[in-house]
Every structure is written in structure tokens, then in C-alpha cells.
Amino acid sequence: MVMGEAAVKAEVAVVGGGPGGYAAAFRAAQHGLDTILISDEAEGLGGACLLRGCIPSKALLEMTGRIDLAREAAEAGIRFQEPEIDREELGNWCRGVVDALTSGLDSLAEEKGVRVIRGRARFASSSRLRVEDADVDAVEFGHAVVATGSRPVEIPDLPFGELIWDSERALALSEIPESLLVVGAGYVGLELGTVYARLGSQVTVVEREDRILPSADPDLVEPLAKHLEELFHDIRLETQVQDVTVLDDGVTVVLSGEEETFHRVLVAVGREPVTDDLGLEETEVERDENGFIVVDEERRTTDDRIFAVGDCNGGLGLAHEAMAEGKVAADVLAGEPSAWDVRAVPAVIYTEPQVAWCGLTEDQARREEIPVAVSHFPFSSSGRARTMGPVAIPGLLKLIAEEETGRLLGMGVTGRQVESLVAEAALALELGASVRDMALTIHPHPTLSEALGEAAEVLLELPTHQARARKGDS
Image (cartoon, rainbow, N blue to C red; front, side, top):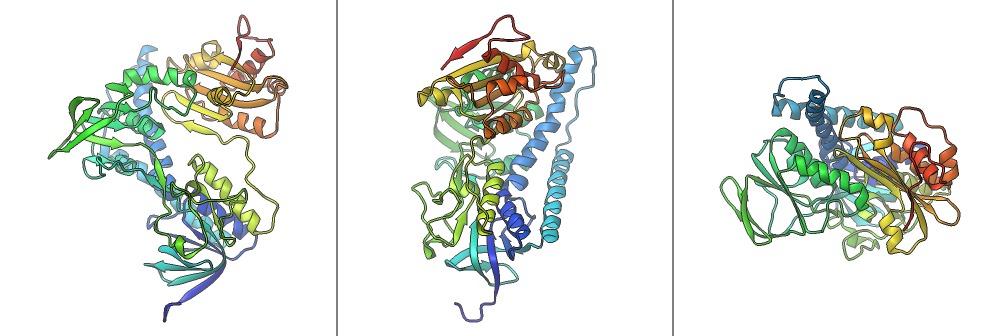
């Protein structure tokens, strides 16, 4: 112990105020455990997701999407003037959305009895945290939960700065560049590329793989790829950045042998865990070769007193996954029977059209040689999709079922406003529902949700709104 160091005590200390951290802290306090949450975010609770990721990006996607909707309305006889974009006002509105949510989380922490300490925490031992830039010097704990999240991966030849952006700088909306190169065609690159293309930037996307969104099934990505080919200036697959020269007001890059200059570059090639400056070497916590904290099904690390949840321990890197893990850890700390035993973590890409899936993918079934039956229901046969405009019609919903038993194993969908459909499928998978269960569930008409029942009927070879069943094996 450092002489003169003032310490406070808690049964549970949570390091990190993002979705995994505040969910763990709130649940621990609800169990009656004396809980302290330490966050180095001056803006408030919420972490990268709320402050610099999920929420601001979806706010910008939602508002800029109105531009596309107005243009579609013209095709139906409703015409508006060309939009006038006030970048500063749009940015202020987006920050207002974030501020309202962070304020709400701060109020919830107080209501639930969680003490929030603003400062930078590092482990001094397996029972003590030192805290910098805070009103306390240290926290002594019975157990700790690490929820420090992740940060954008930086490419050595593309260091982040004024001209080469990470996602945080792109979301700040400090300018709308004439041309923008997006490196990486995952969900971050495509979502932010969509925002800037709608605002008037000439967007070029490069991806080293042979398709965009490599983690999703190709048939789900196809309608999105066709739409983005019209929205973006260019999409170049199997392309890598080979050389970079930063100019006074632009960046010259060599893309697979071709040299081009862009006003700004956005690097969106993934995220890495924030675990390298936590003092974990003072504990018995182990990390893998990529820096992720090793945990068991209870989210307990190799140090019995310390847990880790969310992006810092790997997984899919999704906020809702982190929240669920945080609750598991808190329940275990309270002596409740709990473990990470999840069949389906849903994923949603908020492009236009959206892409979402949960459970087993068709690609995964093929790689792992799992016998499955796969059905497709096209939104061209959906009355509701037809009313939603041209972007909705090329969409589709697919179900993946165990070939022998008909038990649902996975679902995927692409289309307009399909984000909510994946939740029903996730519940069905968690409950072990069958194709027949899904077909017998009455869905309201006209809604996109009918596609879940329709796709199930295809697997049963009893389709209502298709001339014949389109049933295939993977």
C-alpha cells in the first residue's frame, strides 16, 4: 500500500462504464451487493457504444435515411425540395440523443445505489485497484468485474489523425469531405460510409475479402451489395492498401497497384480489447495471444476474484452480448445459479437494407458439415414489403433447421426495418422451437414478421404465398 493512499471498500468493483459494466453494476446492486463502478469517461456512463458507437451512428443513419426516403417518395408522386444539410445542427442533435441517454444512466446508477467514481483504474493486486484523477486513491474489493471494452484497430501505415479517421472521429461529423476512402467493408465501414454518402461525400470502399460483410451469408448480403453499388462511388473487393502518403489536405493511397488521392480516409478494420494498461500483471488474470481476457462460462477469469465481460473477453463484440454477460457475472457473485449458455446472439447491420441474423448460419452449417434444411421467403411476396418502397422488395428471410427433427437452428434476414424480426427468432431458438411451432404462430397482417411463419411453411412444404416450396439442403 502506498503511504497516504485513501481507499474505499466495496463488495463488488466494476471497471468500465459501458453496457457490460453498468449492467453488471446495476444487477449486483439489485442483489444487495455494495457496488462501486469506476469509469474514465468524463461524459458519463455508456462506454464506447453509447458515446462513440452504437447510438450516435444509428442516430445519423436514421436522420440521413430520411434523404433516401424523400427521394423514394418522389417516385410515388410526393415531392420535396432538395435537402439543406446543416452539419453543425445535425451533430448537435446527435449529441443531444447521447446526452439524454447518459443522463438517464447516471440517474439509474444513483437510484440503484451504485457509487460511480470518475477516474482511471488499474489493478494493484487481486483485491485492490488504484484510481487516478478521482476523488479516491484506491478501491479495496471482494470481487471485481472488468468491462473495459474495445477500441478501433489501427493499421501501422494508416495512423489515426486529422486526415485518417477512426470511427470516433467520423461520428464527430466535423466535416463532410468531398471524397472518403473507407478501408474495411464490415458493419462499421458500411454504416458510416452510408452516412457520408447520403450527406454528399463520394465514398469508395475497399475490402481485402471477396465480398462485403464476410461474416454474413452471401444471399443475405446480395440485396445490400446491389444497393450500395448505387449509393457508393465504388466498392473494390480483394483490394488492399499498399502505400500511403499524407498530404496537406488529403491522403494518396496505392490500392492494389493503382494510386488515388482522397480528402479523408476512414479505417474500419475491426476492434481490439482494451486490456493492455490495467495492471493485470499484478493479478493472476490470463490473456490470450490477442489480448482478450480468458474466462469460463461464469465469466470468471483465471483469478478467482476477478470476472471479465464484454468486448475485453472476446465474443462477437456486441453491446447486448456484453450486457447479458454482465448480468451473468453479477448473478454468480450473488450466489445465483447462472452461466453463459446462449444459443443465439442476434446481430444487426443498420445499413439500407438492413441485414440481421442469429444462431447457425448457412455458411457455418456447410463448414461444420451439419445436416440442415434451409428455406427462403422473398419479400417480393410480402404485402407489407411492397408498401415500404423499392429497397424493401429485394429482401428475403431464411430459416435454418435441423434436418432430422425440424428444430430451428438459425435465421437470417435482409430488408427494410428488419431489425426487430431477429428477436422473435432468437427467442424461438432459445426455447428450442421447431419449424412447426413457428408456422403455427399467428403473425399480424400486413407485417414483415409474417415472413417468419411463411418461411417455416416452406420447410413444411405448405407455403401460402409461394407457388411451390423452395426447400434446399446445405
